[in-house]
Length: 224
Picture 1: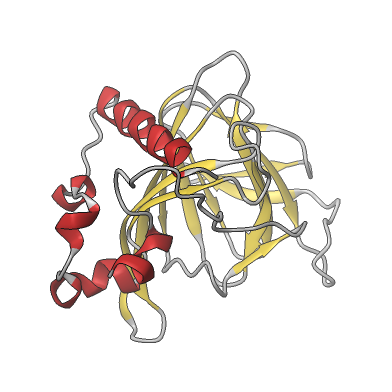
Picture 2: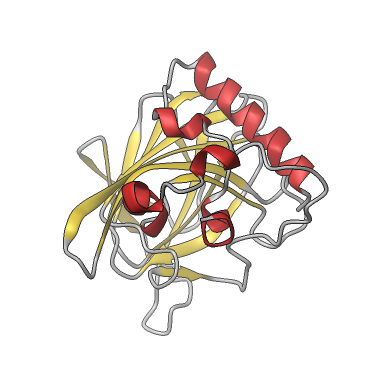
């Protein structure tokens, strides 16, 4: 992805959050220059990968397969520190986050506003394939059984609890607009806890065609 594309996506994501009155921490607006010399006081942010996260999952087509994320808080499994995570995300109409599960993390995915969120779910087989068995999930505390792979619609205000080893992919429903998505979960560990059904790239390679508007989580090692 080009840095100019990433900058444009971040600006649009921020405007979308403002439209829904979702406010971010003050450091979300820092420029790369403002981060200089702050590692000692901001190590929790950097080490636990809080902040801006724009990915096309290696697809080369962000609008088709991609996701905007901002991790607001996150802990650390090894340190047993702050054993929870919160994210805010945005997905466009039919903009897919590919099929995956988490080995350890349980999470609530919440439609915070905008359009409808479509979820497709499968249990994982013993060999990590896609089971055709029905999937039992909690939707806002109500146990619900859904058929494997059948689209499940979450309207604004609704949420779903996903347990470990439940495959899921999601996208905005066509004709209903962009979706603001919340996530409240156990600690997030992208390096060790994600299992995608097909091979993907988690963090994109950035072509530096202009200056970063804000640092991405994968920029921290380079800049700090």
